[in-house]
Image 1 (cartoon, rainbow, N blue to C red):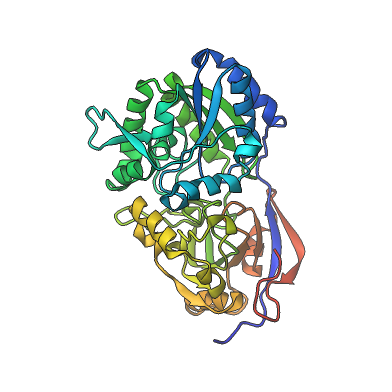
Image 2: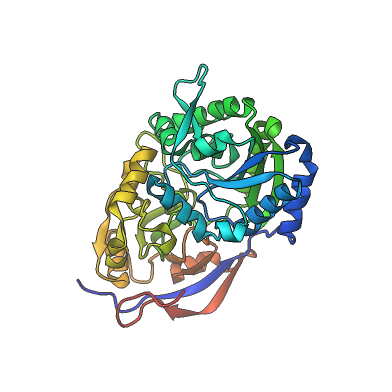
Length: 416
């Protein structure tokens, strides 16, 4: 394959608002202390922790565990991540370990199992399940980030309500909800969450909101009785502070890496403007003609969910894919389009050239190209002169004076 010899782009940095919490541990302890009354005087508390890459998650969980123990309670941690980690107990334990949440580091037991117990579904249209270990505890504390979902938009997206249902319900509950498609997530999860919260086992949720720089900006303990009322407001706060690409139209977007620790869909659909769900409308913005992805994060453990959102990937990424883990994830979610295989190119430069060629004829110098490290950091990017011209003069974007080469002689992207 013919390799492009040069791609010179200019560094641009978007300046997003940056509210953040300076004392994460102190805030967690204070928030829990303010809600002491919702916890029992004694007994066990299952602390539910998920699979998302959350800033300060190790410190947050460790402080929560220590605070519960200081009250005379006996906390233990349960993975609350649906079918992630290859839908195995060891896989889910390993995902937590990747975030520094281990038994030694947290000074408490981690009880990882895919076993669930079935609960009374009432008038729900599906079965209702929860983690067996959590079910046997005297109470449950949810810890999760609240943020816009990558599959749909509604009053409850990715957050505490979803963790209560799908996270704690393991693969069994994930299958139950995802078989209804988007309505199962948008409408079914809140209904199921209300029923679960009404049973009294879940005591509270520690909601986390991050700013556009993946920094902790809100830590709030919400009693179970107020969770469904409070979560939508935190979701809107998270949506207002999402990072976004500064350009709404691109010919080629180069993404250095995708991964489950970056987004549940590997690539955040809110950033790239692609959902790829049959029957669901695509976002109006941004509009990107070709998306090129060059690598898979090690923390994904071969789960390449999100490749189907790209147009071209590299051989390096392809060789890291664990097909079994990836297919388990996409079929459990009910969105197999996201696990499909794009064009595979030998090198990063070849992948870019494939993406550019797919855009049709473009006058040299008029290519609208951007490169980002991943969809968690779309405000840190390199852009082509055509995009740079649109950004200069904006008070929220700092643009460098000189372009730099993106590819080395071997066709690999140079360090970001």
